[in-house]
Image 1: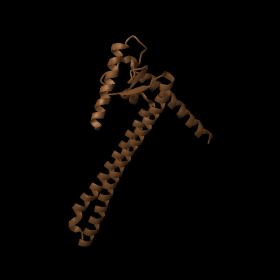
Image 2: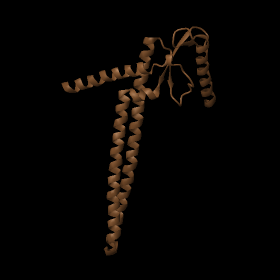
Image 3: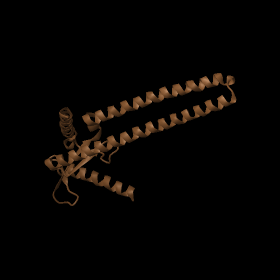
Image 4: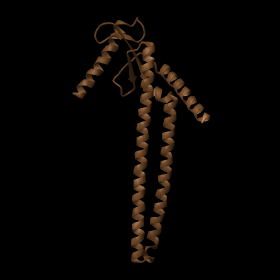
Length: 202
């Protein structure tokens, strides 16, 4: 049922686009027949790749996440090298150790290996959680802006256009990616300035 619903939605979106270009090519940009056949529905689309590339909040968030990932990667590498060194040192000196010493060293190395694996998993989980938070916040900022932008510009529908979306074709006249990105950047600049001013007065 879910697949059928998705297919119907895709067909409806394409049908709206076809109707617009066939019957309303001379009318106001971004207009199409509504699903009820009465009145006009104003439609626009946003290229998600363009927003991710030029929206400063998205760029900064992505850079922070990448930097954190690189730090974790280097830390894991250093820990792995250190642990490997201890293992190799133990293997070289094993014959000179008593049974009690061998048991103690092996238990210690076993704990260190376990701790390394726990740290590795924790780092991966933390990065995944940060990715989720970034995506959630980005979605919230974009949809909140589009709600206001849509009301101000008389838009009833704003579609997401990317290689994975159901929109197979959309004319350039419906593309509001630049306007949305500029608006998002202006809002983010004001938000960032307000935070700096608030921090400075404390």
